[in-house]
Image (cartoon, rainbow, N blue to C red):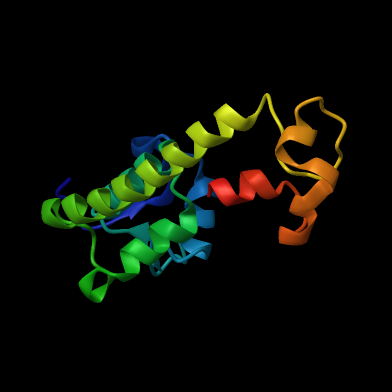
Length: 147
């Protein structure tokens, strides 16, 4: 990786993504390129680490907007260092723990009343007699409270 610049095709191949994905990431402000004299996109080799962070984050359910905010928290929007990665991943772990807890509650409520107001399930009158949860909001009130 001693080359000062990489072509879009080379980055895409090395990262295992489509060229259009790189264009999309760039449009979203997640990575940067510049144009050479031939008007071709060029990237610094450090973009590989940014793309790897993006892909790792997406695999665990972190949104691109959350990745972007994390990148913006880095001084001068630099590529994450090992220390930066420890901080970013630690913050994401906390967020993922909260999501896991929510999903566990969601799983537990799936076979029972979710507070939607339909009153069609045999358990609903136990949880939501006469749709009293309707006063607390619209939609599946019990599920929304689980968040």
